[in-house]
Amino acid sequence: MAESVEKQPGERPPQAWEPLTPRGVAAFGRASLRRLLLVQLVVAILAAITVVWFLDWFWFPTIAQAIKRLPEQGEIRGGSLAWNGESPRRLAENRFLALALDLKHEGKVRSPAHVEVEFGEKSVKIISLFGFLTVDYPRDSTLAFSRLDLEPLWGAWAPEILAIGAGLVIVLLMVSWAFLATLYCAPVWLVAFYRDRELDWRGSWRLAGAALMPGALFFVAMFLFYGLGLLDIVHLTAAAGVHLVIGWIYVLVSPRYLPVVPAETVRKNPFVQSAKATEDGR
Image 1: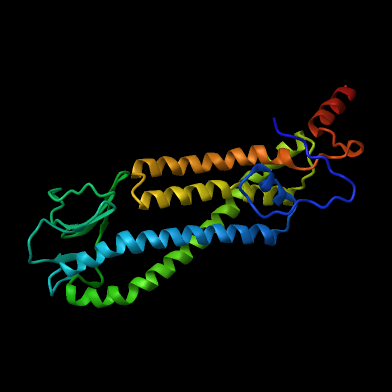
Image 2 (image 1 turned 60 degrees about the vertical axis):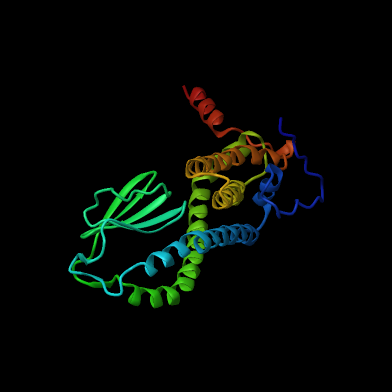
């Protein structure tokens, strides 16, 4: 049973600094927007660092190895791959990513890797636990597909790709958290209202935004364990669902740790008032 938080005269509200406990999340309902955005930015940066670490250690070396195994000449022109070497052929592979060449997409070089990218004559096929996606090569442009062309390009662009990826992770997380906080602020306000807790709509939005942080940190930790080989892709997928449930739990529980509305100003249920007014008018 959640304990009530009585507000004492002259008492300063608790400082919002950790979104890990229901009481800590509730403190953001009375904190500044700047404080919430700062905490969210720190969590987003941690997530971006984890993603960059994973790509740099497990995906990018596999891509570099695959490029080294390409022929000295080759290109994709007019929507077709010009390839004179062996097919099908596995180019590089680890437990997370595999790259192969199969001109007819015959499935003869399937890999147990969690993601496989298979280059065909007319398209590239991306295969994972969730199914596959086929993307046709562009017909109006020419793309390099040789070791001599791609090695210097990859060496020059790999660090930039990591930096761009980190920035995208941070931006996407901040935007998604703002969107989810907008969806969740109404349930937060209703819980606070029916529990007679002090909270306005702006505070509800801030509390909802803070309630997303425990789940986000949980998923960052699970992704780290996935990279270390302690979880497989199935468990990581389950963790993605669990991190949403964690957010819902904090949305429902955290408002109970807000200060109680003083007895002399306890709000009346507007739905009860409306029903009573209707009965009196009959």
